[in-house]
Structure formats: structure tokens, C-alpha cells
Image (tube, rainbow, N blue to C red; front, side, top):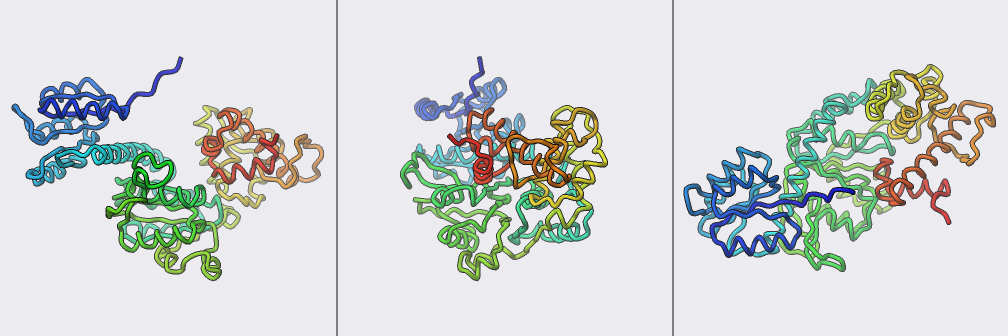
Length: 466
């Protein structure tokens, strides 16, 4: 029998019983695990014996310790705990002092329930992003992004050096290149090695969702802003405050979204969908696309004023076929990663497979190579990736995808490689879809592709047809 997920817990500290009761009921109705205390001493005991996700403290408490004293005590025990101070209009200066001492936010009395839930929700999401980014940063900096994007190619090294020169500026970056060349990798490198590294890295694929949903995802929406908007939603711009917002596939934005994005970039402020309040943000924007924006501007598909606003620095990534000297480096890197992931002692690649992979054009670029090594390590029987480990071929895409894959039917290694790739890719996609019960979004995440790419491959291989 599975365990129930732990509820988000909130600590409410107020010396007025009526307020404690009302706030406790509000958050219980929202699904929180609620812990309440009338004074600092009780709050410290609760925090020491329960896992608290967020705290709501009245600035003025009766008894020995004030709200500021309690703030300091709680932060000493858990520096990452988001703490929201509650205060009257006449104590705003004290609330600001609390912010300087580490409070995440403050809210004024009389408390408006929706405003309070909004503040709590935003700070919980920011705390989650900080935790995610802390884990991600340690993983990335130790493996890929610690000044070591995997390359020895002079042109690519020069491009990284250009990125290093501007990463601490406010300049908006545009990263271009074919699909799979590593545009998001470079965006993360810029963030995690810049002076914004302690802020959130928030990404969104602009091609993966509809126009209406994209507006909501970017800017957030107010409750009731459109059909189905049953509660307030915090958008990516707001979540990326003090950090980096990565806009992937920006060339797929509709004209109306482009216009709204341009306005936000120019003003560094926006309103949620259905809202009137202006929200100011401090973010660094990195955009990416595999489309030809110059041609799109000529045809009127992409706004020239937006292009010149986002392309203050244009970094064009070369395809893998133009940096073949990096293939052995990347293979070694991915082989070690997946050998560790699958707990297998795979330590080398046979000369036949190395020659095959070096000779191939890799239209899917680094992402395709990564997937090839992933599958090869998974299927490897010994310590060396050989032709058997890659289906007597190479995990390469093919135009011909017969279900009855017969290695003896091919006269060249290249044709064999292409057919085997298709065969094993179809098997992998079908297996993942079966494991996740047909959930395409989850399958796409596990396969590290977009839903659109997954749908195209399913159509190509006839997966899911009646």
C-alpha cells in the first residue's frame, strides 16, 4: 500500500485566538497541515518537532519575544524557511525591517483571504524553485556546467567565451541553432555561472502550449480571468524574479503574444491576465529558437522590434556534424553518466562503434547522440559498447522502419545503422508509453522530447493507432 504524500504545512503565530482560528480554518480548507501557536515559545517548540514549509507570524506578539525575535530564532533553525510577517498599517517600517532580516514577505491587516493565499502560494513556489535549483545547480556544476560545456572545438569555445563576457550583464541573449545542439544547456550555463546563480532558473517551451495558455503561463492570471481559471496563478515572469527566464522556441510565438512580450521586456513590468495590478520584475531573459528569425521577419511572422530587443547578443550554436572532434568527448561523458545511472560497468566503446558514430551525420545533434549512448549503455552486455549493444548497428534514425528488423537484409553499415535506430526507438517509445499508462506528457518528459516530437514519432511508427 502506497504512502500518502505529505501535506504542505504552515505555522501560524498570533496572540489573538480569533485570528488564529480563522487563519487555521482558511488554510485547512486549502489542504494545508496547520500548526498554530499563541506566542514565540510555542512556535519554537512546534518548529522543532514538525516539518514546517512556511510560517505566518504576527509582528506584535505578547509575552517575552516579539515577531522579529521569533523571525531570527526560526531562521537560525532553518535559513530556507519562508516567513511572512503580518502587521498593521502603522507598523510598515517594522515589516520592512523584518524583510531586511530575512522575512520573505509581509501582508497588512485587515487580512484579505485571497491576497494572503496569493502571497503564501507565491512564496511556497519560490521556495520550491530555490530547492530545485540548488539541487540542479550542484548536479549541473559538478557534471556539465562548471565552466566545462563538453567541447574542444575552437569555434564553440569562442562562443562560450562570448557568453562568459556578457553573462553578468542585463543583456538579453538569443541562442540559435538546430534542434538538439544544446541551446538550453548554454542557457543554464549562463545562469548557473553568472551573478544570478542564486536566483531561480525558470524555463518555458513557447511551442508546446496554446496561445491562451502561454499568456497565462508567462504572466499568470487572476481567478475568473477565463473559463476554467478557478484560482489565481503565478506566471513564469513572476517566478523568475531575481533570476533567469528561458524562453525556448520563441520563434513559435503568435503575433499577439510577441506584442505583449515586447511590452514587458521594455517596461520590466506586466499585469496578470484578467488583472490590473502592475507587477515589476528583475529578470534576465534568454531566448532560443531553431527557426530562421531573419526570414520570419521578412515574411511578417516575427516582429523586427522584438527581434532587436531579444538579440542584443546572438549566440549561434554549430551542429554536431561541424564539431566531430567533440563526438568522442561527448560519448565518454554520456557513457559515464548512464553507466552510473544504470549501475553498469561500461567503460569503453569498441573501435567499430566509434568509427560508425564518427562517420554519422547526427541530424538530431547532441540530443540524438546522448540518446544513442543512453540506449547503448542500457543494452550493453559487457564493459564495452559494441555492435551488439547498439543492435548490430548504431542507434541512428532511419527512413525505413520495418517491424521485422533483420540485420542480414542490409549491405552497408550506414543503412543497417539507420534501420536499427528506428527499430529500437520504436521499442523504447512503446515501452515508456506502456509504463506510464499512455500519458503522453509524462512519456515525453521521460524520453526528453516535447509532446509535439513524441506525437510525430508515434505517427511515424504507427504507435497508438487503433
